Image (cartoon, rainbow, N blue to C red; front, side):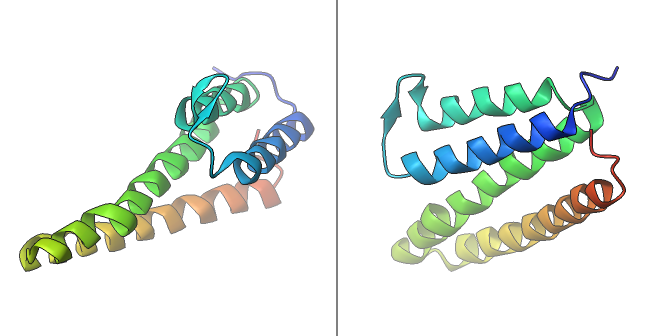
Length: 119
């Protein structure tokens, strides 16, 4: 089921989202709770403007990016610090796999945008 089709509003909301991310990236809390909850609210706003399939692409891109960030900043570092070479190798492999999927999603979103089908 399609939602409101307004690409200009979706782009504006995404731009506001990115601006807020830059503005608040070092803060722990916002008035909506944690930064993560705040950005989930922003994604839900975008959801109202995108059809379900395109929303799913954006949501997957966001969630997979968060996981890759965690792997880079915490999981691999902790495994290396503890001397768990097999865990480090596993985390590295998962990270590389997810980055391939992220790239596929990015290309899909970019292609739909160029064809004016991202709504």
